[in-house]
Picture 1 (tube, rainbow, N blue to C red):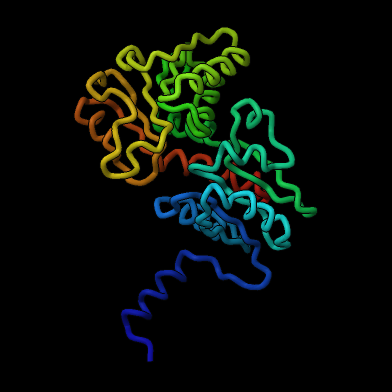
Picture 2: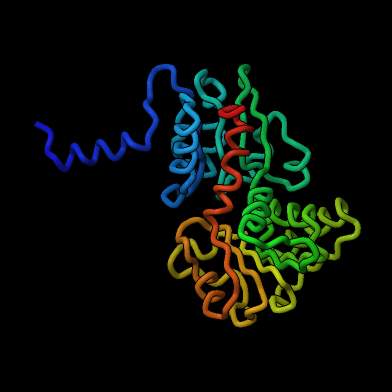
Length: 281
């Protein structure tokens, strides 16, 4: 006999999870770790709202198992594609059969469509989602000076999207300076009018401050930038989804900054991801 509590629990899950049958199209999200991802909740709610017979599930895969998993997914006939997140975005570029021009310039992939013949086609949508989230939140980055912490996949995508959106200057701050230099060179080649720098110590000189690293996801992480330089005239954004209020955002809020958490960025790009993977027209 099912207890009332179990019945209520099952009813709750039926209220937001799509039914899964032998005809259901499968999609995934690849990450390490995986516990923090919010994408399955948001994507599955979208798919259900559109009456799409599909479900997105989490795949916890470590870097040394990434190629093997992707090779296996090529052979899964009811598999439509996947989202790649930390730390797989950069490595995914070499595992795709084809990538968009933006993904090639950025040097990373975060969304992959599986074609009927098993070919994997990658795109990078982090930056577009970030800029749209800023605009929805009432902040147009055009004309701003931007400071971006990190030079990995998410940071690179955000930097390119900000350049496309019309910022006048971007500083890339990264612990490995050569990675920061490489990213600024690619930005300058694509956007010759943009000024770029790699001086991590000049946080206060920017109107927009962005953390594109994973620092702040775990308790005890060092700050991604010098928090003492934050001031109330800045917009401060963090790409991390969990926790919603990272130490960076807490510090920025205390300084009177306008803050932008990570989840709206995901919500802004989730439709684009579903479209690229073929889940939505």
